[in-house]
Length: 387
Image (cartoon, rainbow, N blue to C red; front, top):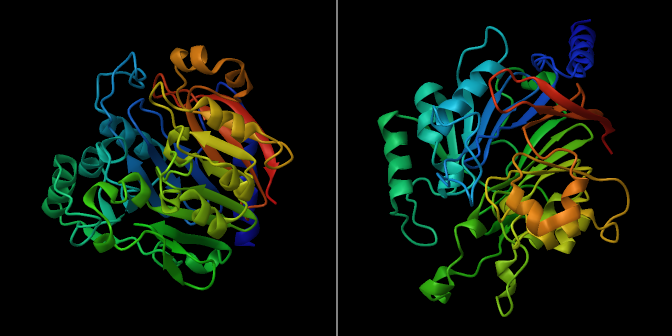
């Protein structure tokens, strides 16, 4: 009976969500929400699992002003971290404690981590996952100001930290009612060049040994990004930080992280574009292997996405069928360079919410107003059927 009631509430919330011009209805038990938050300053997402487990997924502050970057959203009266925290507090279930069960940092670049301390100072984080703990020395000691500030934040707030372990499906779990949702799984795919094989918890090292490389040949920060896949029944969600896949001429094969990752991940319903859709990402094999119904492009700079990247995403030679592309914050500069391809975007501005129905058989994409804190629904796309 309780399962039936939860499912009924979920369906009622979906129906309400289709009221364009109204605030986004609250999350309900059994629903899986993915919020791509637009501040105009970097990547930030908030995930609300079916049992109410919460997760902060990067919190960037690239501090990249126009004309190359976007205008801050909603405006410049607050820092990005404060806007992100306010968004999360608004979206938390009614009566829930303002706490994040997980913080997840894909890699150590400011457009992914620059606002994390601001968010964490306003909403406590129970467990932080990153690629560097405890020594932060791969591929070389990480001593830049951003990493120092991040580590100081962790230490001063006594936050529990773990290194993200590829291959595992028991490091990020439902914290409140795991038994009720046995078809929900977070699978760790890759970190620091170590990639899940797709069999059990087994992994393999894709990067060469550092001792065999010259310093100028070391893996870049982007190549070391965390990658995961979240599954809920038939629904699968992918996010891979800034891993590259389109190698420059003469670069070694292992500089392409997308291909081994794609082999492990397989088809998904929703994919966040690697590296914001930058021109070194979304190679043909990766796109054809994941073949998502929905792409999400977190945009904050005039070089996101690359023209050829967007063309590949739409290319039905790579995989047949319908696919829809949503962006958080497309600039006029992008339109001048890319041209008519951008006319095919389903949305070019706003917070992007993927709301997965209880059980994972279907989902919708809801676009929210980002110029204020009304969180009004601008558009609803779907329902899409999970495959």
